[in-house]
Image (cartoon, rainbow, N blue to C red; front, top):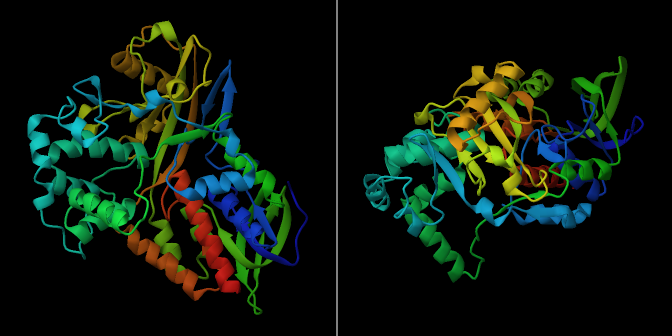
Length: 463
């Protein structure tokens, strides 16, 4: 809802994406007066669920990984736990493209050695991983350098590269292993080996009577991912849409003044603290006069462009059984898509019984220009790829295109230095917090965790 101007407000959150909404909700639960200011006309950011001809599809994330207990805790607090649905059993199977055909990825270490996804040479190369020395602690490696060194070239090309494209739509030659996958980096640094580290850390947890991490499943909601952000938007008391914040100013008494426009009219808000839950570039513009180093760091963060192409086909017109989560495409295969989700196989009720729904991703840092093509060109390109890869024999019943010019921030080599500048700004400027997906991870679970962390930090400073 849209609230009145609050003259005695505790926290203003700028941005009503998942990060901003979750942070506002956590602060509100701690008894703080909070208002969210959102430049757009809706809450949710890139999360958005659509319906068409009996099908349900997403314009952003299609699912989330159950990566932290904080997820279900939040769903319980919002009263939407019973709306959660887990991915189907079939979705446990995931494919990669190899030599132009879909090959299932092994689901366990034992299955790896029976899998057709990798050659005997690649499997043998994995045996060497525990005996390879770790990189020096002060050396920041790209994911590509890390994976080739520890796992070998083939595992990098046909497992790591497509995985990075699936998570970040990014270039593993540029993305930092320590910034993007800190837990994997930490295993090597602590145990000298990723494989040995996984085994030993599990033993340590058992010895200390700590629960051993189970396989983390994917989930969504009966009515799509927007269920989560809609519930958060309902729970947050004050949200002002169509409100663009243009300047923030710290006043002599330590409070903040935010000024901007709403429907062409000037607005002002006063608050003890502000949370900037906006993408890197607009955030840089807001903080430049207060934290020049942080602003400079923010301007250096790149985003991958992505076009999401949803296609509905008659079930009879697709040869592949589509019994799985979907497939990812290694760069080496030289295709024009990053991958495709079998959306109607992942969750029940996503399409009529005689229809299948496929969600394909185009562009990323691998082929950024492709994401900018016209809708009809994208639809034709994706159809050609699906003809080759899943046997789409006839054109789709319909296609829907969503284009995000700045979809996913890239945690490239040097990203940790950028974050240090942002953290220093928080230390030096009381009442200023940053909470967006360029920091702390890009997944739904990461954003829920980051929101809790941001709220805890604000409460601790106020105590």
